[in-house]
Length: 207
Image 1 (cartoon, rainbow, N blue to C red):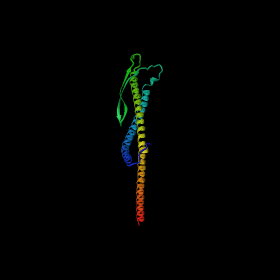
Image 2: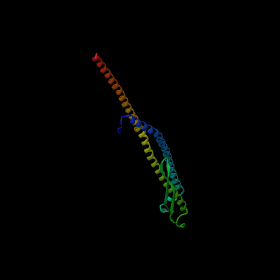
Image 3: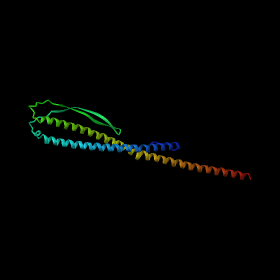
Image 4: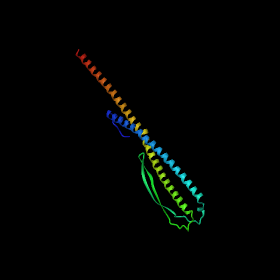
């Protein structure tokens, strides 16, 4: 803990510091609660995305049961070509935003491949897009979790350390100044009594 002078100037500075800390704390706590709200939303969206992907995979299995046949080669039909990302500012935190996804479709012969391959290509694109969105959603959750941790640490720093410390410093200075003032009064009284005693002794000797 930094040393501070036990005087009135230091007392004024500590009082001003306390006022500033107490003024900043509500805004920090508000931001922490806003971040928590955004984190809960992001977690909900992530869970919804996972459930949607599971449902899509189940639909693909029901719609295209022929994929289970080992002699059907569909590898490389759909390839993720490009992912365009952006950013958005949410409560002062920069979060990734998926802007666009592009695919490349491997050329295939309509005669060599069964008719349902067209449906498969479409569903594969949907599944890959879902996975990309899930990855972005997961990243948003991780960033928000980190932001919530940092903001919670700042709030705790203010509530549990800085504000109590400032109050303790103020109390310590006030006690010191009070003791010093009382000591000064006592010294003044003693000096007065000494002067009075000296004056009385002088008068007695003159008599």
